[in-house]
Image 1 (tube, rainbow, N blue to C red):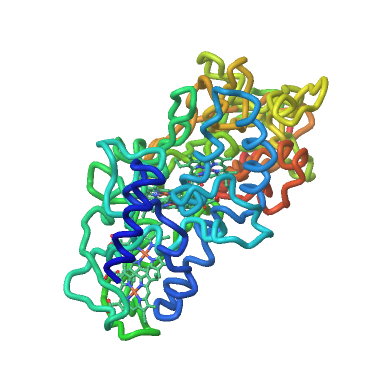
Image 2: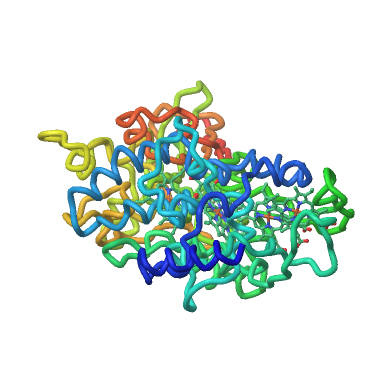
Amino acid sequence: MRRHLILASLLVCWVSPAVAEEKPTYADFETNDVCAECHTDIAAQYEQSVMSKSFTHKWDEVEYYELALPHSGKDEKVAGIKGGCMGCHSPLAFITGDIPPKRPAENTRANDGVSCDLCHSITGMEGDVPFNFNFKVDGKGPKQGTREGVSSGGEHEIAVNPFLETAEFCGVCHNEKDPYDQWVKATQLEWKESPQGKAGIVCQDCHMPPAESNPAPGGDGKVHADTRQHLFNGSHDNAKLKGSIEVLIHTTTPKAKAGDTATFMATVTNAKAGHMIPSGSAEERVVWLDVVAVDAAGKKYPLAVDPKGFENEDMTIASADALAYQDLGELQGIKDFKGLERDGQVPAGDRIFRLPYLDPKGRMTVAQWNTASFGPDYRLAPLEAKNETYTWILPRGVNGPVTVTATVYYSRLVSSVADHLDIPKEEWAAVEVSSNSVTLNIPKK
Ligand code: HEC
Ligand code: HEC
Ligand code: HEC
Ligand code: HEC
Ligand code: HEC
C-alpha cells in the first residue's frame, strides 16, 4: 500500500509539478439519481425546474454548439467562452476539463449540469463579488448544508456552511461579466440594491421557500417546519410569471365624446421580483405592454404608446420594420444576412420593457458574450412602477361603451430569433402576465 502511494506521488511530480493538487474528476461527484434515492421530494422538485436542464435544454444546446462554440474559434476576443459557458451550465465538465463536452444526446456526465452534488460541494467563493462561476468546490468533502444537528445516517458527512444561505451563493452563476467587461447578467447585483435585498429577503426565500416537509423521506430524515423546497421557479414557470408584474389602466377623460381626444394611463409595477424584470438573460426576454380599445360593435383599435422622449427610446417601442441581430449572420457564416425583425411577435407601437444589448457594431444582439455596450435600461426595477400614456382621438362614428384593455406579456425568447434557429414554441410563446380594463361610456350624438 505504502509503496503504491509513494509511486503515485512520484508519478504526479514527474508528470508535472503543477498538478500536484489533483484535478477533480467526474467520479468525485455523485449523480442526481444517487441523491434522489433518499431526497425524493427535493429531487422531484428540482427535476421540474429548468435548473436541472442547464446543459440539456434545447435552446442552451443550440446557443452553445451552433453560435458560441464556433464563435470562440473565430474571434480571439471571445475564445474564453468555449469553457466559460460551461462554468455555469455544466460546472462538472468545466472543473474536470471536459471541454467542449459531448452533445447532450451522447449522455455523458456533462448532462448533470447544475447538479445536487455540485451545489452541495460549493464551500465558498473567490474574492468579494460573486460572478463568472467564482465558486470554490470540493467534491470529495462533506455535503454542504445549513441546518445544525442533522445526520444522514452514515450515508454522507454534513458541513454547516452559512454561505449557502446567502444571495452571493446564487450570484456566483447569476452575475456574469462578458469578454467586453460588461455585466451581461446582474441578478444578484440588482437584488443588492432592491428593497427586498436591503430587508434581508434573499433569493432562497422566493425561489426555495421554506415549508414543512421531510428533506430525506427515502432515508432516515426528520420533518422540519422550514425545509427548503427546491423549486427554482423563474421565468420558465408560468405560475411564477403570472402576476409578477401588475398593470392597472385608467382614463383621465371619462366624459370624452366622439371626435374628442381621450387619454389613458397604464401603471405597470414589478410587484414580486427582488430584481429587475426581466433579469438574468435579459438579452433574449421580451416583456411588453399591449393596449387595445374595443368598441360596442367589437371593432378593435390598437393604441400606440406616447413616447417620453428619452435617448434611444425607439429601442423600447415595437416597430414593424426595425431589424437587429445581424451578428447572427456573422456567427453562422450566412452571407448578406440582413438581420431579423427586432421585436418579433410584438405589435408595432407597444412599449417594451427591456435592456437592449448592443454588439461591437452597436446593433442589438441576443449573444450576451458579444455585447460591447447597452441601450437604455427600460426594465422594471423591484417594486418600481412606470406610467405609460396613450392618446386616442375617438373616431367620429364611435358610441356606447368602449373598453380599453392593457395586457402585459412575457416571452422567453425573441420570436424572430426562435424561428430563425428553429427553437420549440414553448420557448417563445407569449405568456399573459397581467391584464386590466377601463370602460368609457361615449354618449350617442
Ligand atoms: C441513504 C440516504 C441518503 C442519500 C443517498 C443522500 N442523502 Fe443527503 N441526507 C440524508 C438524510 C437522512 C439527511 C438528514 C435529513 C434531515 O433529517 O434533515 C441528509 C441531509 C443532507 C444535507 C443536509 C442539509 C441540511 O442543511 O440539513 C445535504 C446538503 C444533503 N443531504 C445532500 C445530499 C446530496 C447532494 C446527496 C447526493 C450526492 C445526498 N444527500 C444523498 C440521506 C441521504
Ligand atoms: C422577492 C422575491 C424574489 C427575490 C428576493 C428574488 N427573486 Fe428571482 N424571481 C422572482 C419572481 C417573482 C420571478 C418571476 C419574474 C421574472 O421572471 O422576472 C423571478 C425570476 C427569476 C429569474 C428568471 C429571470 C428572467 O427574467 O429570466 C431568475 C434567474 C431569478 N429570479 C433568480 C434570482 C436570484 C439569483 C435571486 C437573488 C440574487 C433572486 N432571484 C431573488 C422573485 C424573487
Ligand atoms: C443551485 C444549487 C442547488 C441545487 C442544484 C440543489 N440544492 Fe439543495 N440546497 C441548496 C441551498 C442553497 C440550500 C440551503 C438553503 C438555505 O438553507 O437557505 C439547500 C438545501 C438542501 C437540503 C436541506 C433542506 C432543509 O431545509 O433541510 C437538502 C437535503 C438538499 N438541499 C438536497 C439537495 C438535493 C438532493 C438536490 C438535487 C436533487 C439539491 N439539493 C440540489 C442549493 C442547491
Ligand atoms: C453553479 C451555477 C448556479 C448556481 C450556484 C445557481 N444557479 Fe440558478 N441557474 C443556473 C443556470 C445555468 C440556470 C439556467 C438554466 C437554463 O439553462 O435554462 C439557472 C436557472 C435558475 C432559475 C430558473 C430561471 C428561469 O428562467 O426559469 C432560477 C429561479 C434560479 N436559477 C435560481 C437560483 C437560486 C435561487 C440560486 C441560489 C440558491 C441559484 N440559482 C444558484 C446556474 C446556477
Ligand atoms: C456566470 C454564469 C453563466 C455563464 C458564464 C453563462 N451562462 Fe448562460 N445562463 C446562466 C444563468 C444563471 C441563466 C438563467 C438566467 C435567467 O433565466 O434569466 C442562463 C441562461 C442561458 C440561456 C437561456 C436559457 C433559457 O432557457 O432561456 C442560454 C441559451 C444560455 N444561458 C447560454 C449560454 C452560453 C452560450 C454561454 C457562453 C457564451 C453562457 N450561457 C454563459 C449563467 C451563465
